[in-house]
Image (tube, rainbow, N blue to C red; front, side, top):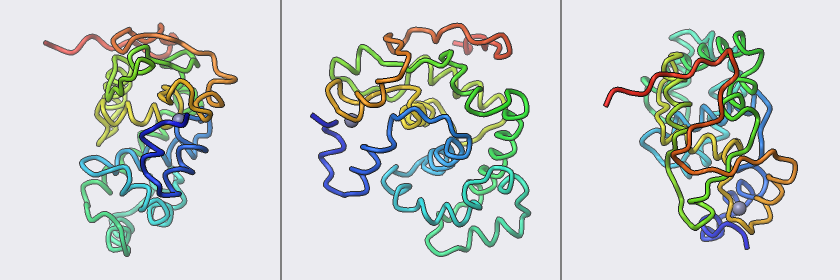
Length: 216
Ligand SMILES: [Zn+2]
């Protein structure tokens, strides 16, 4: 059986996204930036809308090239905002330029965004017991940690719920139904970490300091 929440929509766009992209381990820095932009742009909006806007984003955000987005001038941002079909939020567009600059910083520090992001699980793909039992979480201890670390690095529009969705999309968390063929494909070559939503992530590499717990 395929994941029910994707097959409940008969839109071919959803089906292709489910089958070929969602939850497949992604180690490509340009694609990781593409998903990050879509995730941050989705803040307060739906992922379905982001999927429909994807090609507009591709044009507006220079083919999802973080180095080019980081250099956007205010005038260039203004033109992006005026583009047909673009989400009309200057704050978000400025946020994406800032996020692109933070993204380049992470690449400089860790060698690649891939190394940084997968470092949170020491390269392992997380499968949650609760979701195997039929749950559909929207955050976890891991997404809390990733969102907090990225916010500390200056990323905006990226709270723990969006971080969770991002980690699902790029395959750090695999939330396919247990018997979904796309999920089995995603996990075939993965080093799987079966755990619970509130379990702390595995110890990070030395270069990634663990954050103190948030104040209660
Ligand atoms: Zn699936």
